Picture 1 (cartoon, rainbow, N blue to C red):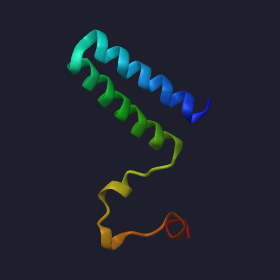
Picture 2 (cartoon, one colour; picture 1 turned 45 degrees about the horizontal axis):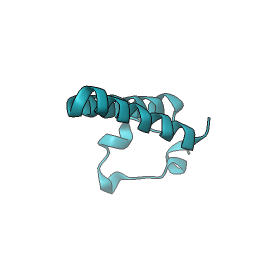
Picture 3 (spheres, rainbow, N blue to C red; picture 1 turned 60 degrees about the vertical axis):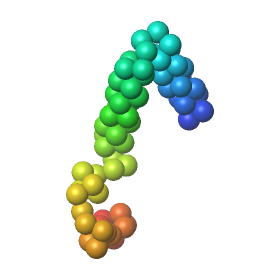
Amino acid sequence: MSMAAIGMIAGMALGFAGYFGGFGAFVLVAALGAIGFVVGRFLEGDWELGDFFRSRGDFRTRRDRQR
């Protein structure tokens, strides 16, 4: 599925939540979508937990860490 189709589906879900459930439902759907996105990135291996807790001075590229 293309990224455009996924974005369209996410936008429609947020639109329905906002229309039928109000602002609170909109925020809940957006927050759960963001959490799902982050979990999906971790499971695919695109991100590592250490990437969020490393200081800026200790930044190394992914290629350097694999050596």
